[in-house]
Length: 287
Image 1 (cartoon, rainbow, N blue to C red):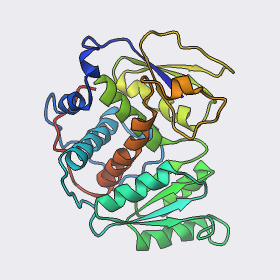
Image 2: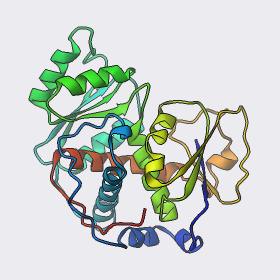
Image 3: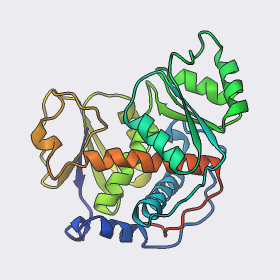
């Protein structure tokens, strides 16, 4: 859960005029440069990516969202590509966003549950990595142990994407950052106040927030009140009843459901950036 306090934004009121302004804001600034090259990389943790590389994925997310959702374009950027999806743990948003997003770009996602594949049990992680490398173009794995992802990445010859592990949840944080960028117009100078368990999501924020010039405050109390006058609320879902009440969860300040939708656009950007040479068509936003 995040309460977001914007400290340094001069045109605060203008940024709340709606999504159309957000789209225009993404199209402001200098053209995106092609110096960032992510093709063939693994995405295990945002710790391994620079601020410019993370920004690039967010620019690409905005580009795909604008061109496909707003303009109705068909972009089969992943035509002929296949994705192996390993899920040791259930998930609504990770599965749905990845399956629909990969298919929307012309690719073929293949969902594998614990009934289909047992990492390191009936088949070694090394063997699994090599088999998947011969049949798919990338793997998204939602696993219990980060160490399993590390082994898969070491043994595979294709990109491995962390769909969640005990240590990190990088694709969730990309969606959070895109949501905040859309709402505020900039990430620089924001203060993120984390209220909740010290978990994989918090770890991912800690590995990336400073790269955008954001401030992070962490607290794990049983109850908490919002002190800042200008705040918004994020939650990765699903929520537990004791975490937040309906007054906050469904309030106009809540960005929970735009955040959930952005899981789709950001995972699409991740896959396109790791599997193709496509470059965003938007101009560089002011992060």
